[in-house]
Amino acid sequence: MTNLYRTKKVIMTKAEIAIAIKRLALEIVEKNHGTKDLAIIGIRTRGVFLAERLSAEIKKISKKTMPIGVLDITLYRDDFTSLSEMPVVKETQIPFVIDDKKIILVDDVLFTGRTIRAALDEIIDFGRPQSIQLAVLIDRGHRELPIQADFVAKTFKTALTEMISVNFQEIDNNDQVTLNDKVS
Amino acid sequence: MKLKDRNLLGIETLDPAEIDLILNTAVPFKQMFTRSVKKVPTLRGKTVVNLFYEPSTRTRASFELAEKRLSADVLNISVATSSVVKGESLIDTAKTIEAMKADFVVIRHSMAGAPHLLARTINASIINAGDGMHEHPTQALLDLFTIREKKGRIEKLNVVIVGDILHSRVARSNIWGLNKMGAKVTVVGPVTLIPSHIEDLKVKVSHKLEEVLPEADVIYVLRMQRERQKQHLFPSLREYSELYGVDMDKLAKCKKDVIVMHPGPMNRGIEISSEVADSSYSVITEQVTNGIAVRMAVLYLLGGGAENVEGAE
Image (cartoon, rainbow over all chains, first blue to last red; front, side):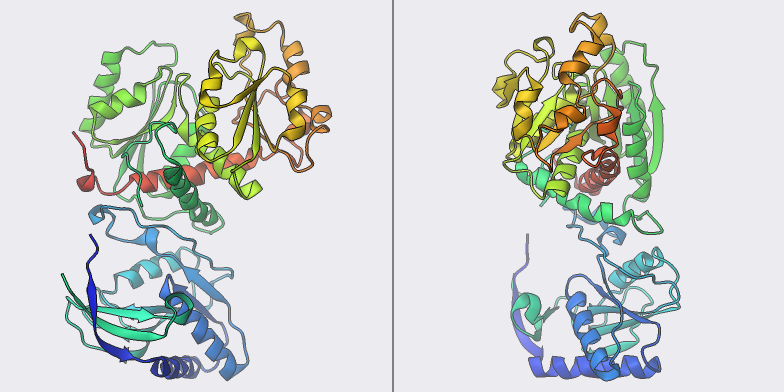
């Protein structure tokens, strides 16, 4: 029962995404006065690629490599009773001790805030970070929980029926953010 | 992708894609054991009843840990081992559990088909934790998981199952599972402990362990129940051990990378020597760890909201 979507508008081009990631990296380094204690965690699937690119940009700026992790929030979802099919569980990989780290949590789109809620719960199960800061490429509004991002590349007002689709070279063969409309 | 049935009653009715799904899902669960908090909130608010009509330590403990690590509420009911449980009383117990609003029932019973009867009677998802001489599906799944983890594949491996095939639900579930995943299975044991027509399950039969060892990638040793000797199925434990017990001398005839498995609990010195059990060939303790991950995967995959259960009577 998949809905079909039609692309209505390109919100970000490849060049714009590259600039936005650079800017996010600068903001993160600036706000944290460098990269001391910083670690970056991307939320599967596309948050991971964004996290990798951010980490590369931060390395360019600071010449420091920060630890990077991958979060699969599936087991922390709050909607199991309303799903007809159990989502595929993938591995969470956090190969560093998160205690006292400043965690930069990365996702592509901030929408209801429920994914971030699940991610926060999962991170806390790994230990007690000094802080968790949220970085996203797009904030599309419609929050259902009191959650805000610390770093946003682009805020874009959407209707609930619309869908934002972030494409990354690594998985989608192009870099682009589009606004899509439901066809059926 | 999801499991077709809302119960896990046996391996025989699963298709290879479903087995693959369970094994793949178990990987992230196993990885979770390295965390400081080995628990996720996935089955919060769900109730699991562990209904054991036969004594069991490790299977019950493994299920209980899997359930608790998924944050389910767990109720253990152990029924006196000596009582012969009649059909009616099982149904009555089931109705009671149903009234307690259980979402899952994990059942072990000495009668083959008891889990199937339960599945027809109540709405909870039923997981077979061993029914008579029939099936023990989660054991076979954890064994498949362990083989895949150690060998990187299951397909085309030569698996030798040695021991009391006749009385073993572990052997039956493993034969089905291994065949579905493309392994080549040989069963070995005394004539009296190999059921006739076992070849119909597409396995090779041998009565001489040493002849099949050089080809083996996996040696699966079954527990020899001492009471079988009293049933005159073989002359003496010593003779059994001599012919079918896996010791270092027999392992010397195997490939260097052979692995030795055992469902536990072991009779050291009978079906397996202490040296072998504690050697680097043995993956027996790994099987125990993997058992929890695989059972978590099964609970997770069967655990979609009760409202969505299709085909419930």
